[in-house]
Length: 164
Length: 164
DNA sequence: GCTTACGATGTGCTCAAGCATATGAATTGT
DNA sequence: ACAATTCATATGCTTGAGCACATCGTAAGC
Image (cartoon, rainbow over all chains, first blue to last red):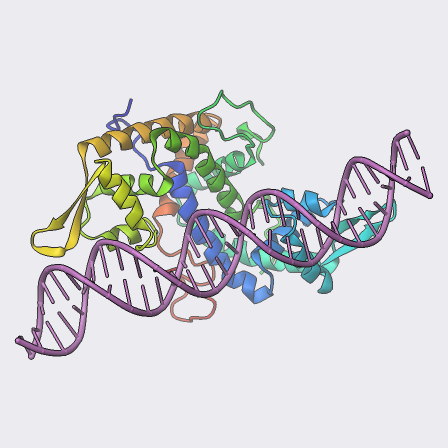
């Protein structure tokens, strides 16, 4: 049970994941700075790249941001032409959000720079582990319900070997 | 450099790692609450379990906490008999920090509960990927230098930021 | 037309974290 | 003995995040 004599001796996942995530984010900061985008702005660009969104509240929730604090970010991105934010003609309360070509260019540049660095980091892993590590990380990141105590969470899409 | 047009399209590591770490931490919270230890207190128990420490400042740095904010945590842990904090007879300025048997018991209980939950999470990964995922995670977490902009290339301050 | 509901936006409050400083006790070097 | 240093501790400042509420424009139902 509580004995850690067996093969289960390892740090808690969160104990490894959180500092690592923090360090990765800190490592990204210079790259983001160089392109003049904040972390939140980058999150917006990433999210809008995947699918245009119809409301800002939805965007805020999608990237885990506060809907009131995201406004300044959108103001800035729109002012710089990286995103478009036009009122929906069908419902002029909502702002249709989409990435502009310029925005996509910036997103691509930032992400390329980041991933080049990340590839170098990943290169320090054994080649055999590397792909599996990425698959595992993507699978866990895709999970919605990470409850450690409740009933076994049900499977969503993206588990198993389906991550290509 | 040309694009990696292959199947390397994946989210940034930090974009997966940070929310996942947050979710894991949130998932741990009920377990910690059930045992009456805060996240920082648990971090202290984990750290002291590995090696007793001679100064509180060293402990704070080891777990990435503020040395001034850790004091209340230590006060509480000591008051509950989970750690010992006696003045060093050789240098009465420093407090020798160590886990008590009781503290180890709590640590074991908490960690066991957490890891049982984590095992269930990890069980959702393909068995083949699982061990590799853990190896990779541990390897990356052990890295000191996660600079994305220029670790291999010597010198050149450039964008390299020191992460404390 | 009027009332109610909803989205975007602004504002203020609270909390936790990070940082700097000040103080007291104790050690070390001179 | 005295000065400088070190550790633990307390306190205050600042920032960013999260949250609640108020306002305004717009839409929909009555």
